[in-house]
Length: 424
Image (cartoon, rainbow, N blue to C red):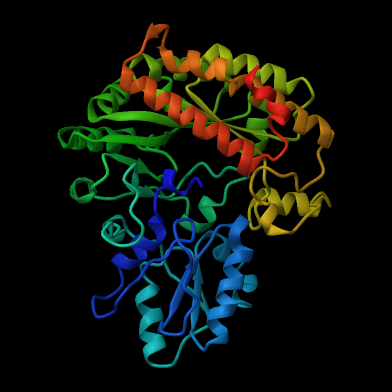
């Protein structure tokens, strides 16, 4: 039911963009429509995340049973290529710009290889503008990518494994052209962060300003807490929401995860600065870190309310296969489940250190019941930085919070809000 609030698959739109024009391309996104499992395709390319990889394998097996070659790619296939190969004729590992044309050529020549991996990272000018004219269309928001690569390398994140650790920013004129081609008024940047290179981001923001669009993106605390010029340019360009990976209010957890950009003491300052420039902040928080204790949840809730976050995303730390976190926990004998369908960030798949499973679930429930109560949602939506907000901002914040509440309740955490207590 939440597909209408998500953006179409940027991965498949980018893949379509690098497909030679002599090939006819159809994109089917199962979040928006049923997948037609029929025998009139020459080749099927599939991408999935860990939590829906099993469903992807089911579909791949159905296509292959009809004699249609299947090529698997994306995050999960790149992290576990040998597993993916059991359900595919070929696996593309990592970025596809340099390998996908070879795959198509090998299929035509009946010389398809089992694995394809680029010999180098894709250079910025080689990253294509996605084809926004194909696939599902979401009138609310579409996505685009300004850069690739993340130098931070958090223990729990797979981005470095798939995209590399070298930051590569696309030419700004390419980005402006793509943004102009997008019909939706709101564009979401899928980049790891638009604060990795402040000089690049400032140039981009100034170039986007005349387009009269709205933008959402990710950013890092260390830059957002100190760079007022970047925030001013972002606000002038039409940026409305910053998604910030707060992760934890414990510096011990942050240090152990290797997120060197985060300093807990800077959280409040960064959030205040963003809001002072008229933009909203959604904080991403994870629980189940090794230094989390039963007291973590009330302390986190107090901080959330003090910071006046406009939105939150609550997750259980998830050891995705292939990440350093998974490798460490596997070596420690702590992984308890390898059913990838449970890797939704709403389930616990490993043994905790200083919490019981019940304490973890009850703690998250405590935060969600308070933050997503209708009383709190209404108050947040009516005010911004203590002042009465505009009607447009009210509708935007209220709708976003209600969607987050419903998503958390029905699709992420089945145990949240029992018996309607979230309305207290």
